[in-house]
Length: 436
Image (cartoon, rainbow, N blue to C red; front, side, top):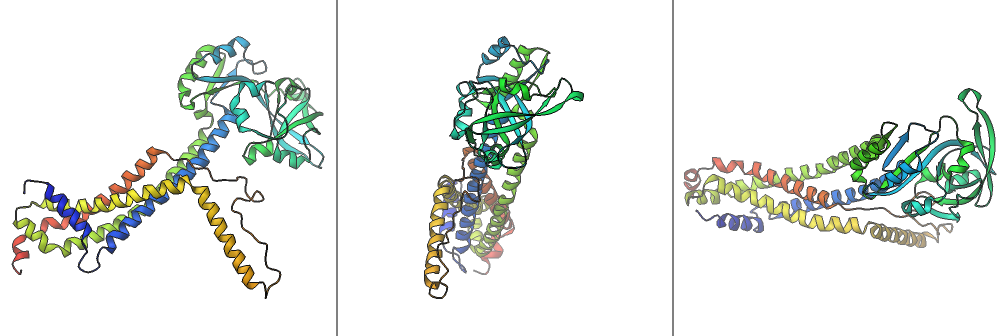
C-alpha cells in the first residue's frame, strides 16, 4: 500500500459510517462540544477585548497619554521651542503641557467632594481631537478660556448639585512652601458638564485652563508635557527621540511603564480566562479519546485485514488520527462561524433576549392578573441606566486570537486521537483472523 490516498479514504469512511453499538453519537457530540468551546471562547475573548481596549484607550486618551515628559523645573515646564521639537517627532499627533491638581469641591449640596482637576491649554480641543471624541458634552460647552471657568463630569455635577452656568467652590492651598500653606476657597463657574463613558472619570474629574489653575497649584504640583501618538505601539522610538530633545534635564516615561500595574493585571485576567474556558477542550478531548479507543476495539478485525494486506501500523494509526482531526475540523469550523456571529451581534442577541424575557413576564402577568390585580408593568432591561453605566456591550475580534483558539482546539482533538490509536500497534493479524 504505497499510495497514501487510501488512508484518507478509510479515515473518511470511518468518520461517516455508523458504529456497531451507538452509531455516530459520540463523534457528533464531540464535534458539538468542540464547536461550543470555540464559540464560547471567541465570544468571551471578543467581549473582554472590547472592555479592556476601551479601558486602555480611555486611560491613554484622558489620563496618562502615550508619553509623559517631566522637566528639571517642575513649576515652569518645557519652553515653547522644546514643545515644537517634540511635536516634530514622526508619529506624534499632539503635544501639550498639563498638570494635575487634587482638591475639594463644594456645590449647592452640603459636604465636599474630592476631585482631580486636569489643567490643559485653553485651545486643547483644537490641539487634541481625540479628547473631543472621548468627551460627550451634555450641558454647556467645553470652554476653558473664560476666567475662573471649569468643565466637570456629570456624576460630579450630580453629587455637588450644580449645572452648567452655576458656581462651585474649590479649596486652594496657597503658600510658597509646605510650612506656610493656608486653605482658601476659590469660586469657579461650571462652563460645561461632560460624560466620558467611565464612572470614575465622570465622578471625580474636571478640566480647567493652565492659567486658571495657577491659584490652585501647590508647591507639590508640577507642569508636565503629554504626547499622543498615531500608533501607541511606536512609543519606544518616541521616548528615545524625546529623551534626546530634553537632554538630562528631565525624564521621559511611556504608557507601558506608567500604567504597568493595571495593564499587567488586565493581561493576567485575560490569560486566566482563556485557561479556564480552554478546559472545555480538555473535557472534549477526553471524550474523543474514549470514543476512538472504542472505535479501535470495534474495528479490530478490519485493522487485522489491513495489516494482512500490507498496511504498516503507523498508516493504520494515522487513519484514526485523521478521524479525530475530522471531528476537530468540523467542530472548529462551525464554532468559528457561531463565535463570529455571537461576537459581532452580541448586542442584538441581548436585545432579542430582553424582548423574550419581557414577553414571558407579560404573559405570566396577564394569566395571573385575575388572582393578583397588582401584577403588571414590570419589565426587564439588561442595560438600564438606573443600574449600569453602559448602554451596550463592546466587542472586538482579533483574528490572531481566533486562529490561536482554532489551532488549540484542533491540537487537542488530534492529540486525543493520537493517544487513543496507540493500541493499533499491538494488534496481530494472525490472532485476529484465526477465528474469522
